[in-house]
Length: 418
Image (cartoon, rainbow, N blue to C red; front, side, top):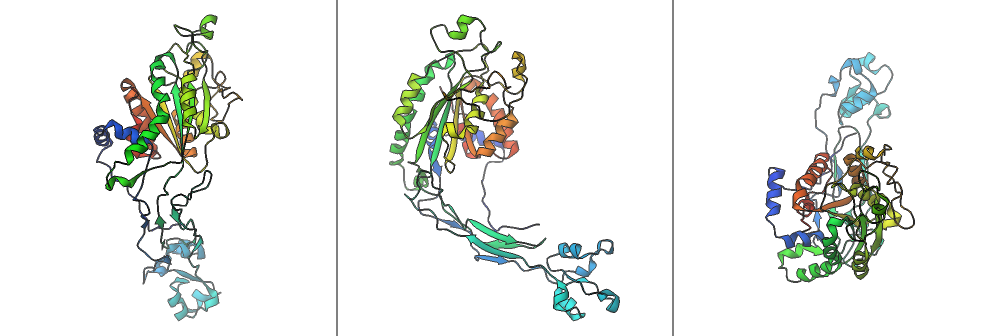
């Protein structure tokens, strides 16, 4: 089957991705922070719609030579697929009686004596099956789906090579829900960055305050008030050579007293309580490991797959901010510690929020990470130090090659945590 929808959304970018990065890097840092919590939209209430009729089947090309259907494949099915103007006469002996082709236009078949009830000519049918009103400002509830596209469902029964078109109206919902989960590397080298993270809850209020000073053109960026925050942390697998195997270092691997190492822990599920977010970050204990790469991708997969524990809303915009000052382990690295079982990409959190398969399963591959991001329709933002920018840029380019990543996160993707 083949069809065409007369709707086109375009994203204009510079002639190369490298130029795109250069342009984004010239933007102000405050815009990078601000854009994390904005929804790119039209002016409130403005709609975008295709300038065509509600729905119609486009007219077929006239005088198409249906009779030229190759004889070696001369069947009803082949005729119907040959062109959307072709019809088939199923009357017994039709082509033997008058030497006219069975595959031809309806008009020609009738002229040559084929009755209507013997003509096979499937019709293309397009109908709207769900056409609810677009969501207005203030109508979005916590778990309610925002209606931003109208109609929501269109049924199309289309024959090969036929064309249909229908009208589509789009309006960005105001205050569309956003779930933001912050994944932080809590190894010892990140000790100084905890304070910055704890201030993130207040930063949301600052961003909203800044929006009041934007001019009329900047009103196109509406900040959602319907957001929730969550927080998780990661260190690495509690195995040699990733952490120090000495018993005293297993209990406190840092130069000063600190927590035992772990793979991933969900510190706080998604909530609207920004004050609690700051409190949880302040109280989260630093830990440590030996090698420079961290087990952060274990944490990303768990954060994406453990829907009940993290508390993702099904209809919310899902965002994960991944903050670290180091590289990452990936599939195959676990073999250095004797962990050979591949990562299954499933949720494995206990009642306390700890990842239970850290010592049993290998790190996830980049492909698995991309698969989970795609399945959850999430946005992954890397907040990394300058020295690690190029490493995570390579991960980003892999996602670009897969053609499933959100280009508008380019600037935020490499936001320097320092």
